[in-house]
Length: 578
Ligand SMILES: Nc1nc2c(ncn2[C@@H]2O[C@H](COP(=O)(O)OP(=O)(O)OP(=O)(O)O)[C@@H](O)[C@H]2O)c(=O)[nH]1
Ligand SMILES: [Mg+2]
Image (cartoon, rainbow, N blue to C red):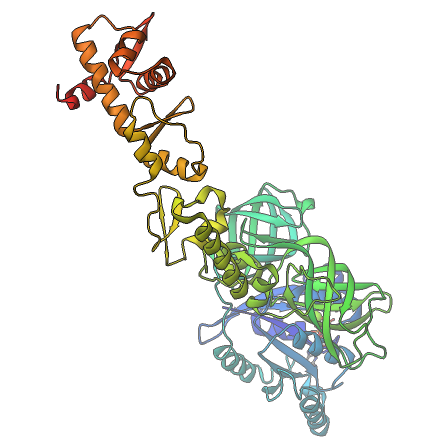
């Protein structure tokens, strides 16, 4: 299935041709039928003999309805460009071609219509004019098929040409992130709100939960149709009618857009390229009431030209656009810029940055993902995906990191580890990024929440304070002059036990427990502090914290003034060898 838009000057026979090809009159409004003029978008589809499907979006040619034309051509795959042989190239032939070119449409063919009303030399003239006008555009070298829809001439040739065109026209890509720009909303009897649009980017399914932007309202897909048939899912590159719950008809309109939650960066400020039409008779500056046409929508924008203050006719540059509402946009999206005061099409371009963070005076937008990372230093890869549409493997942790920033961070963390010496750097002192960087350092080992240089000799081995504690187990020295970090590390390692500000060798605690176990074996009803103190041969100053430690570790417990067996006494008694 391909979605193909018509294009061309008013009255040149676009709608007549669509009807001749599909059997459906795309002009659905009574006023359109009465005036013989297309006002708004029309839709009709057909299956070619090759089984290829075409969904036509028929646009109005009249300049007054240009905004409706713009709402329809944003997401199409190709165009059927119509020029009447009787009139030849006209202003909206030119304007439509420029717009399609700026929107990045790459495939199309030309139907030279009303040939039954044009003498051969007039047809030849029209052909020559078309060839000249499409030079340098996507229509250069395209088939020009002569038809007369009223006389029924050339329709088989046109069908064959459409088939050949679609054969080389890629179908819309599936990036697993559907986006449906709404071009019509109506209330269906008994079915609630229905929106239609050309689906791109991914598949929609019945029961999908979607977000409507602007506004962020959550809606659910109750039912789907494509080409008037009920579907449980519809892939990208199709016309879709989605019946939604959770929203009323007047809460949505043309230019709104449906996406899945969390997949898009919803933005009110973008940087983009701008190519100015060479038919313009003045340069483009920030002055003027500019309107950007993005997706199916029309948005008044504040615009600033980046770099030089103006872009001349036929020139190109970069601009920053401030949107009145948040939209889910992506680099590569195209827009058309018009000036509403003069009612003229200024030009158009490609969105390059959906979250510009560099001030306008210095911004140099492009599609380079590396720039997006460099400007930020580091970016969460999920966020980067929303900003650029590109999936990157993280450089570190969950981040894509600019090379210079990564090198500096590695150096900084490595220096902090080196400075911490064999005590190690407490990894809790680093932020999440710092810890992720740490994990990339080869010559660092992380153990029990502390990072040390892998080759560092263990300067805590045979620590003099540990030796001093061991030499005087039950009356240990104060840790005066001992490095606090070293002391903490010795405690963490379990070589030293701290209780009430007093430090004991681990072996002293074990020995003390064994002594108490012996005492309690002799006096199961309990022992006094004084008895324990004497058995340890120490003073209250050391006996009290040591006993507290035994209480805390479950070796002993208090009963009134006595200590009795705690739940863990068995273990130390068993280990005492007594
Ligand atoms: N003889 C002849 N008349 C045609 C042909 N195509 C269109 N017409 C007539 O030209 C008039 C305009 O045709 P439309 O199909 O409405 O033209 P359009 O391009 O859709 O016009 P807009 O949508 O208003 O831009 C109608 O009266 C058609 O009957 C053709 O191939 N031959
Ligand atoms: Mg028409």
